[in-house]
Length: 64
Image (tube, rainbow, N blue to C red):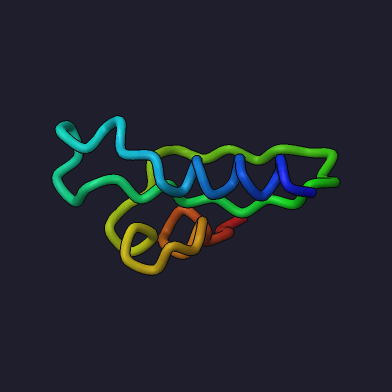
């Protein structure tokens, strides 16, 4: 699926916000071409920025 692969690489290479981000841009996402749902979170913190893994910080903790 070349268009999906191209879209994913373009999103990961995005630098539009560079001037506004102290750590620089690092779009963090996880997706599958046949996914039927979307889960969107707020801007990631330093831990997610460094790891590149979505919700790998306090936002991923479930304290129900």
